[in-house]
Image (cartoon, rainbow, N blue to C red; front, side):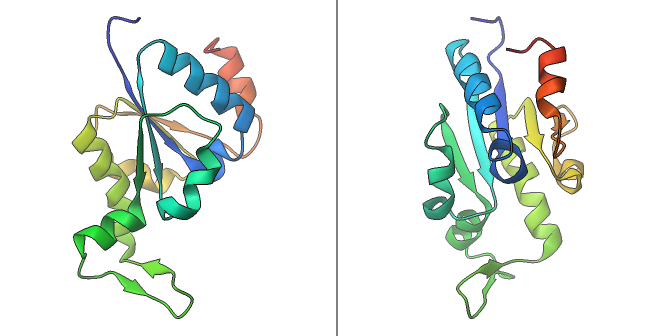
Length: 141
C-alpha cells in the first residue's frame, strides 16, 4: 500500500462510460493499493448505478439525490420527472462533496465543475478521445 491513502473521484458520463475498460483497470489497481474511490454523478443513483456495476468503488454520490434529500429551495421537477436546480448550485455540488470527503483527485469531462473544487484537489480533465494514451504514457496501469 502507498504511504498515503488517496480519495479519488470519478464522474460517470463522459468519463467512466467513455472509457469503461480503462476505468475498470484503474479502479481495481487503486482499490488494491488501498485508495478510496468515489463515484460522483448528476443522475439519480437508481438510474446511474448500473453504469458502475463493473467497477470497484467505495462511495456513490448523486447530485440529484443530494438536493432531493436536502430539500434545496431552488430544486424543481419538470413534467417528465427530471429534477433541476440553479446552475451554480448544481455545479458547486460536486466540489462541495469533494471538500466534505477530502478528495485528492477528481476525473471529469466537464471543466466547468473544476472552479468549485478545493484548491488542493488535483483535477484531471478527461477528453472525449485518446484518454487511454494519456494514462498509458503516465504508466498508471
